Length: 149
Image (cartoon, rainbow, N blue to C red; front, side):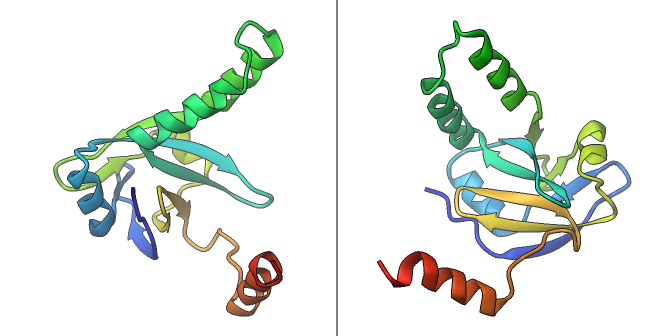
């Protein structure tokens, strides 16, 4: 079980490499994960990369496939589109991943990123583009979702 948490800022070097936070690298190393899978996700006003350890991604993919009939052309077309925005990322000896050029363009990657953990995955987004909830909004949302149940 992974526990990627927190929010970190990082620089993007001239080649498009981003450092994976040390706490995340430690967890990946403990599970002998050297490869990550990144998926472009689009929200209302921005795009980002959601990054998964290879083993987590394989489980997600199995779950998606189990809900589809791969003999049905609509399901195959959906699956093709679901997986077409996926990139494999290798962690180099310095703890960095190279973001492919096509991917950089899709998410408007600049010189700085925010890396945010979400337990078994984390996101890489251009700095100051993700619209997080403020503490009051989060408290209200938490109350609505969990407080009255």
